Length: 322
Length: 259
Ligand SMILES: Cc1cc2nc3c(=O)[nH]c(=O)nc-3n(C[C@H](O)[C@H](O)[C@H](O)COP(=O)(O)OP(=O)(O)OC[C@H]3O[C@@H](n4cnc5c(N)ncnc54)[C@H](O)[C@@H]3O)c2cc1C
Ligand SMILES: Nc1ncnc2c1ncn2[C@@H]1O[C@H](COP(=O)(O)O)[C@@H](O)[C@H]1O
Image (cartoon, rainbow over all chains, first blue to last red; front, side, top):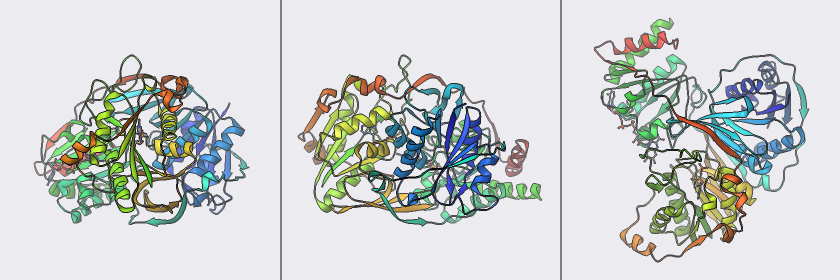
């Protein structure tokens, strides 16, 4: 069976959950081979990247860890992948559908003159990708008709399943071209970030909107999120008002999320907001206006004042967990 | 500095977007078009860079005849001239073909800095800026929430999940901007009048040196094989809070195994 390459998304070596989802998906399509690019591969111990990738079924791991791969923006990753594509001739390349993942995929498509499909929510036999477009209004099946299929897959599309394997390891030597080293990263700045899961990766997202009335009231959303182990999102009205960081905005000009559970609190459900959350599996809303468009989307909705409903809900969850 | 700003006309956000049944491409004829909202920020940023350091701003659009409306809007905001790549052969181009065609069109325009929106609201791929940088062999500085540009080079703050990266390159460079970067201006009456007299060059495939099989459906690397409207969602349960709304919601979450 031909290899299906999976680009490992990781933080200092620790693979993110989406990597395990993609390995699980790759296993249904061919031989899952992980591609690890950057620093951190050798540093971690028992729970290190090698062990984790093996646990989720990687039969081979390509490692490109030398050189200054982390010092430049995006281009080096595409270059490494292109090198592996040309030597290994994989059946397809799967990449997480994150902002950077999509850029890597785009550059790889140009380098290999291959077709590109982004934001897949599933892949069937023959590498037919399923997508949901126009804010979830239309389901599409698409196929790559040229070169090596390059498909970016949305986080949370597949449930990760362990399937321990004994991967072989191949070190990839990289000679970065002049054009891959044009955009230098001078500094990486981390702004406020709690211990909460990342928005696009989280299984549960609790979002707050203008209904919260003030930035300090986001503490209600945070408490509810923490009781569920959820990520916190916000509508644009809330981020524009400076109540919550822009990085947490959900919607057309923010993040696209597709969690198991999405909770919209004090959010009307404008079309631009829906564009970023409509494919969530279960949708819940709290809004005092029974006519709010968000109620057209919900599985369960409460018409009521969030300032009484949310604290009661958080208490109830804490009680049930105790 | 020669700045080119790539803008795209997209179906109006509020319009019901459709795929056409025969060739499974976005139906652009049947709906009102607007400038991709994110590209307004790109135009604004180009104008600000020009206003601060001098230079010329050229608008580049690839799209059907009616995209001229979007070009006019960019010109009335203050861009100096425009290039419209328009040819029936472009219909159905995917990202691979679009980036190819835009790169070819850019070959006919002097450019030090190319500025784009971070994403189009119809395709929502967010890949054209990176693909264009790859094709041009220019530095890629994307997802910018702040741009400092001079003849010496460009420095941006790239929006990331956890904060931002400071990224720097010399020219030529391709920059994409997020909507947080500025507040786009409205065209003034004077701007609208002036726009009518600004130079607009129309390019066909032949003018841009593009072969018919390099773009359109033939030049694309991907195809939509099937599509269907999403089955309507079953109406959810909506409950009015009678003092126990939070508890009821908790019950629902428990029944779905979220707690
Ligand atoms: C180009 C463009 C891009 C955009 N991109 C995005 C995007 O990415 N994401 C996004 O979210 N928006 C986006 N928007 C904005 C979008 O159109 C809406 O303006 C925005 O989503 C509204 O946010 P909201 O629902 O929080 O506020 P509102 O629409 O004001 O809704 C607030 C809701 O809270 C309810 N409420 C008030 N008080 C209470 C209370 N005490 N208890 C319960 N409910 C209460 C109200 O009934 C109302 O329904 C974009 C707009 C444009 C033009
Ligand atoms: N046909 C086009 N003509 C001009 N610019 C385009 C075109 N398509 C995409 N772009 C630019 O590329 C950006 C990203 O588009 P996309 O990758 O399709 O989401 C847009 O915001 C535009 O600036």
